[in-house]
Length: 82
Image (cartoon, helix red, strand yellow):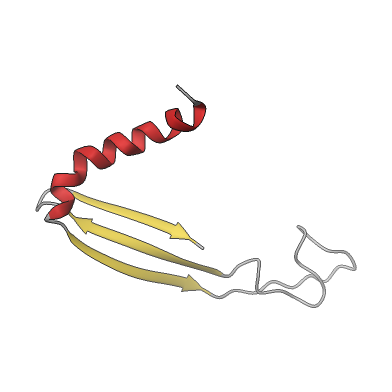
């Protein structure tokens, strides 16, 4: 078995087993985000991004979340930061 297939096999099995439940599932997609800034009082770049000019790249986050209510007793939540 190739390494690529062996890494994907658990996901394939989980999807196959949950497929009947997912057909009747209630799905909700939502997003989230934070905006944060950082500025340094040093003459050098800190942690590869933070300078005297400041940056929003270090603390700002945006992402998505998928909630699935498969049954009244079983729920699944997947999230991904972009």
